[in-house]
Image (cartoon, rainbow, N blue to C red; front, side):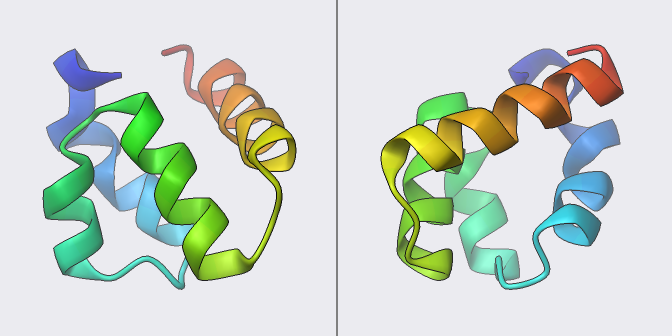
Length: 62
């Protein structure tokens, strides 16, 4: 995810609107950071966050 982060950051923000610009700076393309932020912002389990990120990666061919 990191290699194309500058191109996908906007799509991440669209997909998960509760993520702040600061969150996106902290994530900086790291999948584990994205999963953790989704858990925090959306109150979901790690498994659900992993599922959502996996679906996102398939959609955006990451």
